[in-house]
Amino acid sequence: MHLAITILILVVLILWGLPIISAFGGALIYATLTMDLNVGALLPSGYSRLNTVVLLAIPLFILAGGVMQRGELGGKLVSFINLFVGRFVGGLGAVGVIACAAFGAISGSAAATLSCIGSIMFPQLEKSGYDRGQAVSLIICASPLGLLIPPSSIQILYAWSSNQSVLVCFLSTVGPGLLLTFLLSVVNWLLSRRRLKLESRPQAEIIPEVPAQSKLAVTKSALPALLMPFIILGGIYSGKFTPTEAAAISVIYAVPVGFFIYKTLTIKNFFEALRESGVTCGVLMTMLLVVMILSRVFVMQGLPQQLMSLFRSISADKLMILLMINIFMVLIGMLMDDVSGTLLCTPLLLPLIISLGVSPIQFAAILGVNLGMGNITPPTAPLLYLGGRLGNASVRQMMRPTLWLLVGAWLPTLIVTTYWPPLSLWLPSLFVGRPLW
Image 1 (cartoon, one colour):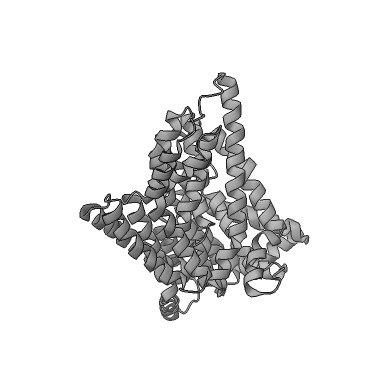
Image 2 (cartoon, helix red, strand yellow):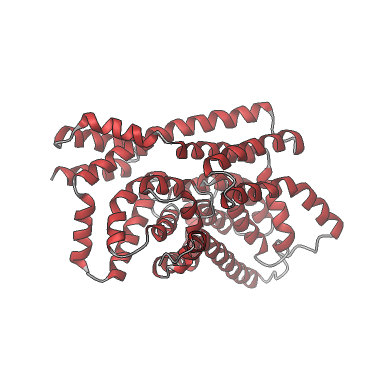
C-alpha cells in the first residue's frame, strides 16, 4: 500500500509541474516516513554510487557543449554539411538532422543540441521556405540523436547503474542512431516534396551549386570543428583514452579552437559556459543522489518483481511484454528528463529484460530510443516545449509535422531496435569478439 502511494505521489508531483528533484524528494520523504527502511544506510549507499570517476564525464561533456555553442563550432559543422546535401529538396532539413547527430556526438545532450543547432537552423529553414512548425519540429525530433550517437550521457549513466561496459553501451546505440538519422531525413524529404507541390514552387528550396573555391574555403574553416568528433570518438574506440578522459579532452580542444582559431569565444561567454555547466552539474549530482536512493527503495520493496508479475499476468508472450515495456518507458520519457528516466527504468526493468532473454546491451539501445521518443511525444514532451520557445512556434503549428516524424521515423526505429537485436548488437559483438544475441 505504501509503495503504491509513493509512486502516486511521484506521478502527481511531476504532473503538478514540480522540478524532478522535488518530485522524487517528496516521494522519498513519504517512503522513509512510512516504510520500514534503514534510513541510515540509504544515504551512504547513494553517496558511494556517486563516488566514481565515470560520472565526471557528464559535466565535462556539458561544458564542452557550452563552449562549442558559444565558440560557434556547431555553426561550422552546419556550414560544412550544407555543402553536400543542402542544395536538394529537403536537403536543408537533412543538414539540420545530420548536424544534430554530429553535435550530439560531442555534447551527448539533447537539450544542448536543440539549443545550439536550433538557434542556427531555425532562421535558415524558415528563410528557405519551410513552414515554421515543420522547421522547429524537425530539429526538435532530431535533437534526441544526442542521446543515441555516442558518446551519450545517458549511456554513461546506464552503464554505471547496470554495471555494463560504457564503450559497449556506446556502440549499441550507433545502429539505431544512424537508422533514425536516415528516417528523419526521408520523412522531411517527403514532407518537403508535398509542401512544394502544393505551393507550386518546385525550386523554392533548391540552392545553386556552390563554387569549388567556396567549398574549399568552407571546408578549411570547418576543419578544426570536424576534427573534434574524430579525435574524441577515435580515441574512445581505439582504447587510447576512457570516456571520462575523452570528455576532458573535448573541453581542452574546444577552448583554444573557440578562442584562437574562430575567435568567437570570449572571456565573458567562456565564464558564462563555466557558470552554467557548474549549475547544471550541481543540480545533476543532487538529482542523481535523490533518484538513485528512491530507485533503491523501489528495488528493496520488490517493485521490479511486481512489474514482472503484472506484465506476465497480462500476457506471457515475449513480444507483448516487450511492447508493454516500451509503452511504460515512453510514458516515463514523457513525464521526466532523460537522466531521471534512465536512473528509474534501469533498476526497475533490467531484471525483467534479462528474464526475457534480452541482452542488457540491447536494452541500452531500447532505453535510449524510448526516452528520446518520450521527450518529444505530446502531451508532455519537455523537448517539444523547449523547442517551441526557442523557435517561437506554437504547439498547434508543431503538432502535425511532429506526429509525422514520430510515426515515420521514431516508431520504426523503436520497433526495429526492440525486435531485431543485430541492429544494436552487431557493433558491440564485433568489439567483444563474440555474438551477443
